Image (cartoon, rainbow, N blue to C red; front, side):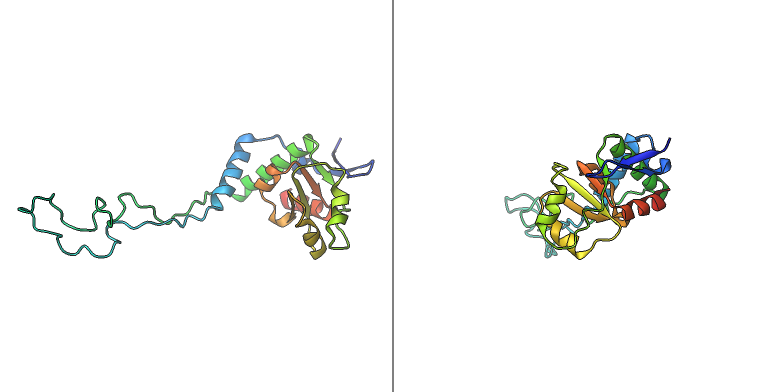
Length: 203
């Protein structure tokens, strides 16, 4: 018996692939997937100056002995107020390696768990013909979800304009789907075209 996804506001289901939506939930892999995506989003541009980057300090501030002050060799020392930083932060890359096969398995694992939890539905009604927030909001009223993710095969202008003023509603193309959006959403609505793209991409 194949798996089925319910159709929003209708008394029928759509059969889907067991390969994509019948995976065992792999918590370790999903955690790695989410961590990798969040790490890759970090800018990593923080930078501070070490003693070699600070200007000046080419001459000894005062002679070694006889002044009554502590000996000092350069004004660029981290001990000085205008000196460099001892363990200065440098620009870095936070990207983590994750091959394509692991990514596909992780996304399939998330989608399968969402289906088991009845948080995944199919609907073509979200593809509105007018850029009116009221129209889309009426379509989503039956869901009663705090965070809703709409997965489409291609984002049209009407849907983008209609959804941008609705709090906690995110629209994403199937090709740009990421694990953080899936995990964060309480309810996921997939259009028939997007469902076909997901099955072809993740099979």
